Amino acid sequence: MSETAENVLLSSLSSISNTFNNNGPSFNFHSNISTEELLTVRTPPMQKFLRENVTKYHTEGGYVLDAGCGSGKDSALLISNGFQNLVSCDLSDGMVSLAKRNKAAFLEQEKTDYSKWEIFEASLVTLKEQIVSKPELPQQYDNILCIGNTLPFILDKKDAFESMKSFAGLLRSGGALIIDHRNFHPMINKGKVNKNGFNPCTLEKFNNLNDIIPHVIKSPGEERKPLVAFLEFQRGDGIKMYFSYRIYTPETMTEIAKQTFGPDVKVEVFFDLKPPSESPEEDACWVTYVITKP
Ligand SMILES: C[S@@+](CC[C@H](N)C(=O)[O-])C[C@H]1O[C@@H](n2cnc3c(N)ncnc32)[C@H](O)[C@@H]1O
Image (cartoon, rainbow, N blue to C red):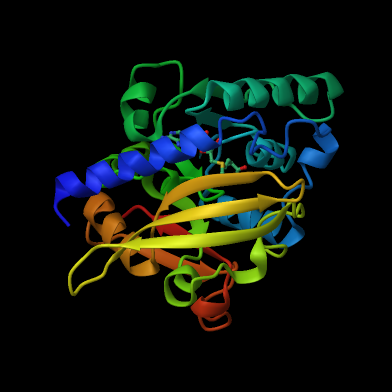
């Protein structure tokens, strides 16, 4: 497919999602829950994975960046686990307001020190420049989280590349990017989503979705390269939502990591938070990477 045709297709898919999802219901399931509940949205295996992988790369006084933070639940979780130096950002002003509201609610409780938590609006695509333009923010990070299937929201190939370049520029040498996405393998190969919703094991306790129907769009010609998954979400309340995601596989993620972090980058892959030897790719719901900067 020519680059122009691909861009036209991708922007059409974005506008379909924008038009059809503009019917009031929010995709955010964490807007009306208490701070205590917010800290338990992630299941225990996911909490453990985050804690262990942040601890492994953490240095004294070092910072964690939560890129595409949404409600800020993972930032709050890490702060409650003793990582006070959290910086969080999201493109959506609504999500930034929600994360700030959550910070204010945590501050009121005075159990843990949430005062150092910085939250601001920014796009992943230009994140490095935006942080450089705010000298009051830390310029180097031990860890960057880009989780909850956030990178695939960026459909444009160049924008995805720029986002990964931003992460590479903001991590200290030896620091790690934790990034994840839905497992597109069963969508590509079987036309279905494993486990019909949010993975109860690795992602979140909540299961507000009845079903997810994937439509995979592939490039024409012999290669038939999977480009985009257009997902039809059937919510428990009957409302349908539509989202388009750029497709990643362990191979394409490793390729983009090499291009942006350099050929010596270390990419660890996990299927449902387990190494590939313990969890086959085709059965997994979620794919997570720990990408270490050389
Ligand atoms: C599925 S949510 C995940 C949020 C959070 N990381 C979590 O796991 O709960 C994806 C988030 O990415 C944000 N997002 C999408 N495109 C973005 C971009 N280009 N730059 C920054 N944030 C973006 C959305 O606003 C949304 O909050």
